[in-house]
Structure formats: structure tokens, C-alpha cells
Length: 112
Picture 1 (cartoon, rainbow, N blue to C red):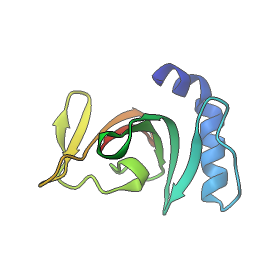
Picture 2 (picture 1 turned 30 degrees about the vertical axis):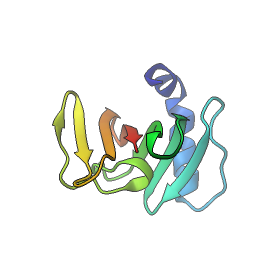
Picture 3 (picture 1 turned 135 degrees about the vertical axis):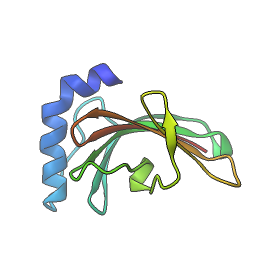
Picture 4 (picture 1 turned 60 degrees about the vertical axis):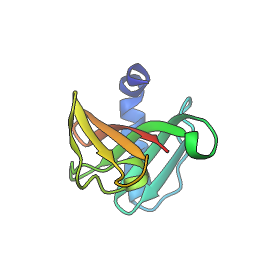
């Protein structure tokens, strides 16, 4: 997915800016969906599973470069993990990993 992100970075950025300006936009080819959560634009790339064994991944465009997770969720309480940060629900088994890819861009992986 990271290779596809870098190949599509210009188009992803243009699409994110259109969405933030309140315009309708389609996700670039190869990306599943584009959606807005307040001031975060989320591009879904993949997902699998059912019910409590579901996993989603993609990228977020965040103009102020703050750490957010899947669908713009708060990453409050996240801890450093590898190249990024890991948030875990307590109590529970939901987890979100976020890693910076470029200025304003973050990879996310959410597991339910």
C-alpha cells in the first residue's frame, strides 16, 4: 500500500483538498473510498474480516499534522510503536496503529 500511496500522492492531495473545500470527489483508482471526518480526510485502501475480527487500513490527510486514527478517531493515550504509535482500547480489544508517511499524511490500521 505504501508504494501505491507515493505513486498517488499528488492525486490524493488534490482530492483531499477538494473534500475539505466541501466538494464531492471520488477516491483515486485503486482506493476504496474517500470520506471526511471533521477536518480529516480518510482514504480507505483495504479491509477484511467480519464482526469482531475486522481490520481496515488506509491513509488520513490531516492538515495540522496531529495524530488521528481510523475515521478521525482520537489517538489519546497512544504509545510509540516501531515507526508510529499504537492506541489500544482499555478495556477491550480494539487497536489502531498510525504511522507518518509524508507531511500531513498518516497510514492507519484499525483492528476490531
